[in-house]
Length: 499
Image (tube, rainbow, N blue to C red; front, side, top):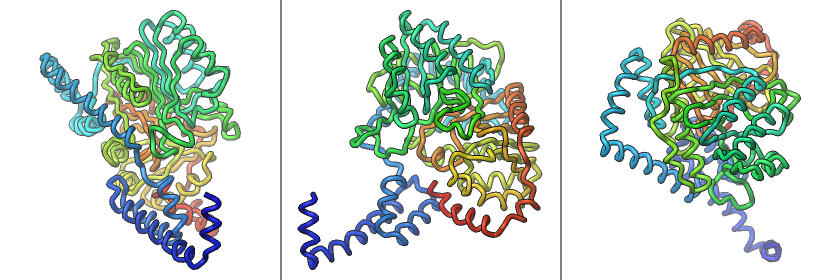
């Protein structure tokens, strides 16, 4: 390659036209790709077009690395195969007569919902194909110590299998309880499978603990592996951001906790990290199992469909819950559309917590609309953020939110990492997804919609504890900021469609 470049530059009359034509051709190809990308929203498309025009060489390179949510051919084929398996499963149900029973059960569950909740449930089902299921016991965990102690207890009682999927897993005294329980379970013959993101859990995947887990019989698989040549996925920053655990198909965990202590030693300066996770005992855990089985198949080609059943009625309450998974293989804007619909449910109050707030225009409009129609609209974000770029970009939206009457609170007790929404104390969302483009369009995320007043009120109490450690941003205070701060925030905010 180097001799070729030297020869090219030594012959300047030949090299000059090539060097002039290269940025032009690259820019035109990139512009065409942006305009043809069905998943690229108008705001993002305009920003990419401007970047390519302003920087005709750098802009295209940045777009092809970070802008297009593209899948490798093998990964795309695998997603299509997963979708085909779902269709085959439905056909098998119809042939066995189970479909009519499922349809009757579904109609019973939907009939128990309020009309607006029913519409939300149908919309959410269009994403993953799973409708709400009842009979779930739901507990909420805030402290990582309590969460992983209970998770270790559940793993110690496992009889068939333990499935764990995390973006980040770290070796520390808190997570060690789960690792030790996994090793014990594997040694007594329980099938233990662990799926860890290739970037988020890189340190653990190359650690001594990883070797110990494998030696005990735990199958540890790297999700979306990274390297010079990536076999399965196209973009290095498309990550598996899910945090789910399924034990014997009837107990599941979903939320924002990574498998790590709250001091989060990879980013200790922002500690403690404040998270929330739901433990679900009942049929909804089986739907979490579907997400894991699909992700496991995408990484290993191993079929575990036989482990997905109709769920186990293990609950003593009628809590209705609905599982959905989102990512680059779902239809475009699935997650922001869901959030928009949840916010539109509100008649009295909607409270949202998120660590990263860079909304698209529809999500922003839903908050503005809710506030202007008299709904108490509360947004809680961390005062200090581990991403300075996201922190500055989010401030661009404050003026419009405050003018509309949205309450903005800055959490001061650490890095608020919980991603929750509660509407009127009746409907709630626990998710791994942030309110930003990365979660909306790129990452694999998992969410649980809960149509239950008792559970939603308990989650609302958790949010109230966040507010107790937060400082409200007053409109007059925000208006009085120095001009240079507004200039910087608005300038960085122009990049928000690209973040």
